[in-house]
Length: 247
Image (tube, rainbow, N blue to C red; front, side):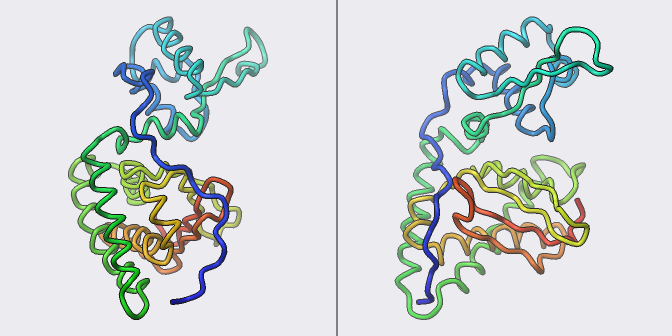
């Protein structure tokens, strides 16, 4: 078996049940919209997106903020005049709560099955990483086709792949490239197979890398230069996307 570098702080596992605060469909919808935005949202932004009365929206946001699922940022409005504007951003707990992969007992059973599969694959002779990535690639290609059918084809390919990762419970967070010719880094904040990844990163992480590889190729996107760095940040793994992708 290849030498595996020491593992740093891991991403968080998915909680078994979503917080009760997102059991309300309106609050769950607000949380999802805030999670998907690139910048913090004002009440006006959210009303324009999801509808409803501003006062009702403020009430739901207060519940989410009190639960620690969103954070509040206060600043001057555009032009520097008037009352300070409050903007809402998702917290790590909120990002986890917004994941549609949570809270399903059936999903947890699949996670247990996948973990057992990883344990078995790690015991095989030879380099398990090659087989793991190939399996992940086939899985990702199939998932990408079904996800595109569910979500429609109006999103760019990379957004569809990131949406797939979100649905699977990885809570992806994009960091824009610092240089024009460098790829973007995606922080994977949660891991649906965290325990198995700790035991066998050479298997589980290669399956996940293959998953993204297969999903990208399904959308006719180049995957050369794609890489995954397990436990590279406190509380996150790093997925590096090649700069040749269509964003």
